Length: 105
Image (tube, rainbow, N blue to C red; front, side, top):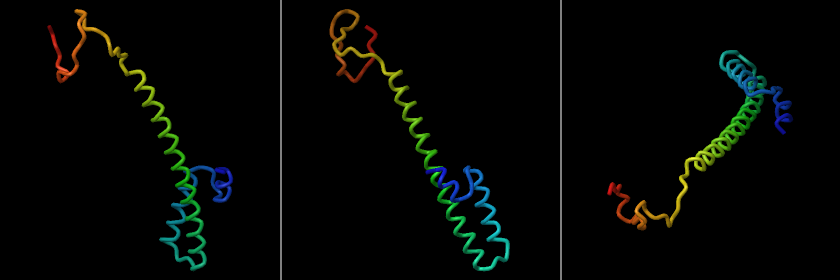
């Protein structure tokens, strides 16, 4: 579908579409174009804008997937192994209800 959209707009890259869109906007702002040419430029610009927005949205989704994958790998790697019934070094059960104080003795 991306290839189809690229052929509809006439550009194959995001950068190419942005360059063409900037050229269209500049021509519309600076040149004295007939009304029909202005409308034609506007239509082409709208197509290029949709193409760029789709490419950016796709890139954002890919980056979010990478970040989610990396964060779950980090969570797995940093999660400490816990034993709920592990006794303290002296053999007595650890009471964790005391506001998580650090006990030295």
